Image 1 (cartoon, one colour):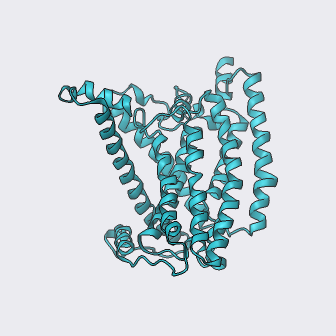
Image 2 (cartoon, helix red, strand yellow; image 1 turned 60 degrees about the horizontal axis):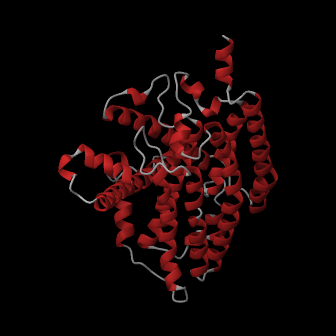
Image 3 (cartoon, helix red, strand yellow; image 1 turned 90 degrees about the horizontal axis):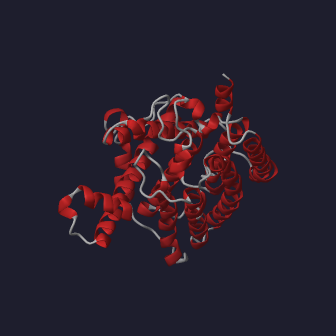
Length: 370
C-alpha cells in the first residue's frame, strides 16, 4: 500500500505535501471499498446466476419477475434480508452469536487482498500470497463453529462440527495441490506465479500443461476446493434434508446475509486461485497484455482473469446441481484415503520432474527439440 501511495503522490504533484501515512491510509480505505463493492456485486449477481443455472438444469425458468429476465432479483433479496427482523434465540450466547457471521465474512473477504486481477491490479502483492490465503480463510472455520455452538441448537451444533471436520480435512489437499505451482514459479506470490506462465506459448505456457502432474493437480485442487467451500455434493454442514440448514439455522436478516456473501466470496477466491496457479491468471493467450500502454493492459488482463475465474465458478455451479450429496463417512474417506495421498504423490512427481528436466515443462522441451 505504501508503494502505491508513493506512486500516486509522484504522479499527482498536488498530493506531494500530503504526509505519507495519511496517503497510505487513504489508499487502503479506497482499495478496501473497491474490493468490498466487487465482493458484494459478485455475491448478488452470483446468486442470480446460480438460480438461473439451477433452473436450466431442472428445466424451469428461475427468477423472471424483478427486472428484465429477473436480473434485479438479487437486489430485492438484499433489501428483504436487510429489513427482516434480527432474531437472537433466548438461550443463545448473544456475543458469540452476533460475532460469528462477521468473522466468517472477514475470513472470506480478506483473501481478496492478494488476488491478482490484472497486470498491476492487486491490492497487496505479498511474497507469501498463497500462504496468506490459506491462513485468513481458516477464520471461516472458527466463525462457523462459533455460530453452531452459540446458537444453542442441536442441528446448528452438528452442522458446525461437520463444517470444522470437513474444512480442516480438505485444507490439506487444497494446499498440497497448489504447491506444484509454487515450485514451478519459485515463489509464494500470486503475481509471480502468474508471471511465470507468460510468454508466446499461449495456453501451453499455463501450469495446467506444464507436465502431467500439474494437469492432475488442477483437478485435485478443484475437487478439494469444492469440498472446502461446502459446495454440493460436499455440502454436509448445510444439508437441508438432514440438518434443516445446519450451522446458520437460527440466523435471520443481515447476519444470515453475511454467511451467504461469505459463501460466494469463497467460491470466487477458489476460482481466482485456480486461474492464477493453473490457467495463466491475467495472461491473454498468444498475446502479452503487459506490453499495452497505460490502462489498456490492465483492462485487457482484468477481462482475461475474470473470464477464467467466472468460467470456473460456472463449472462449480454446474457440478452443484448435477451430483447427489455424499454421506459423511464417504466425504471424510475421500479426503484422508484418496485426496491426501494422491496430492502427496503428485507433489513428489512434480518435484522429480523439475529436478530431472531442470524446471522445463513439456512445451519447452518440445520447443527445444524442434
